[in-house]
Length: 75
Image (tube, rainbow, N blue to C red; front, side, top):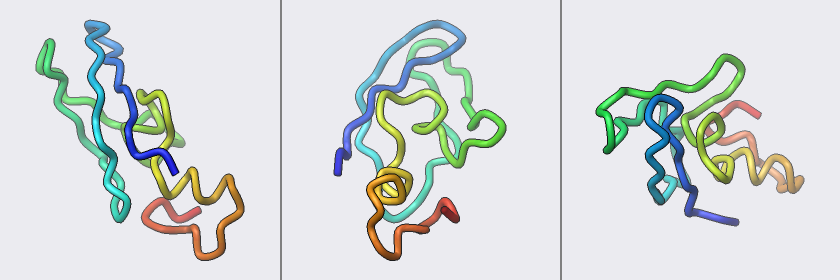
């Protein structure tokens, strides 16, 4: 499981490496470049799935077929 994701702001293109929580989705993220408050795109459960280089841990677990992988994202 990968716990680091690089978030890219769609407004100013600032990139930042962030550690993802393993037990919760992160619905909001404030860009350190422009201060924009990012929310997930329609159909995504969190900002890592929308703007990150790696999807959140619950989605990673679901894609790998781990049992009990629904987690916070309802997989």
